[in-house]
Amino acid sequence: MGKVITIGQVKGGCGKTTVTAITAHILSENHKVLCMDTDGQGNLTEMLTLRPIRDYRLDGIGGVLDAIKGVDTGTSPFDYIFELNTNLHLMPASELMTTVYEWLFTQYKGNRNYALKNMIDLVKDNYDYVLIDTPPELGYMLINCMASSDGIVAMYNAERFCHSSLLTYHETISTFRQRNINNNLRLYGILCTLLDARRSDAKDFLNMVRNDDNLGKYVFDDTISRKAAVGRLSYMGFDDNPELKEAIKQYRPYVNQLLERMANDFDC
Image (cartoon, rainbow, N blue to C red; front, side, top):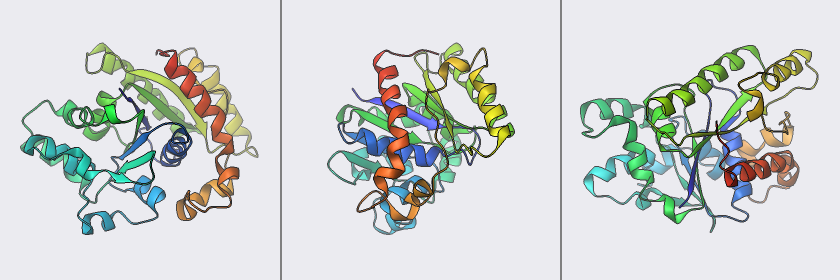
């Protein structure tokens, strides 16, 4: 049975899409991985394929929303999975992802918290890991992602507003367990990203979360710094990219620690 991991935050600009893509790439070196893009902006889809999300609609591939709706109509979610290579697959976003709220409240007959989970349960046994890239908001799509997941990797950009949103995100994870929405949800870790070594305030906010009585134990040992090679992944991609090794090497220690924490059922 595949582990389902949400990589997210309730604030934008924290590097979650880049982290999702690189984590998936590294894991796929030895495991079978499915990426799900639940953000209507479709940045993960574009990053992994170097194609705009509208192309998938034009090609008739559909995406996550179509797969969720297909559970009720008998359509297989595998019809919406795009094979990037043997070990790495993608269920893309679509431009219609924002309509999920209207559909959940006007047409969906089941529990709105579990619409995504019901679809993921049909495919996850075919993968070692399912990684979900999420929209930067605490709405029903993010709720569905968290309700579907075994664990969370929370993004933390070391600055004031991201620190505030991280506190909210952590409280939300605890609430999911307390209210029996997802009793088994784990916080696998907090990954500090987009660090700028030239800024003293970034170091202060990094130390703030590391020394926090509630959050400190979740912070991954290694942090992610701003690198030009990482920024260029959005248009150079992962195939035939001469900078790839340089771009992803600082992510490998975090992925190794994530694997260790999942193996030990790291708890929040």
